[in-house]
Length: 95
Image (cartoon, rainbow, N blue to C red; front, side, top):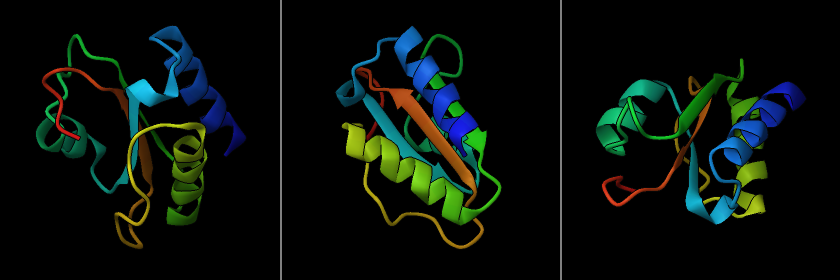
């Protein structure tokens, strides 16, 4: 879990580390969630997702980033959800 947090934190820092400028969530299908539901551009926008292995780990990592100031809300997904994702909010993204 710590490796995933570190990877995401490093990514946020690389692309603008203000947590309030980012959205964090969990998903069963992170590609669909990012590129269809949130309207993130696969090429050109800053986004990241990681397989956390379990829904418990995904929720813990999501909560960590929400507590740091990222946009989003706890409670999404179901027991199969094991991916955490984050993207930098833009004028065309849908939170």
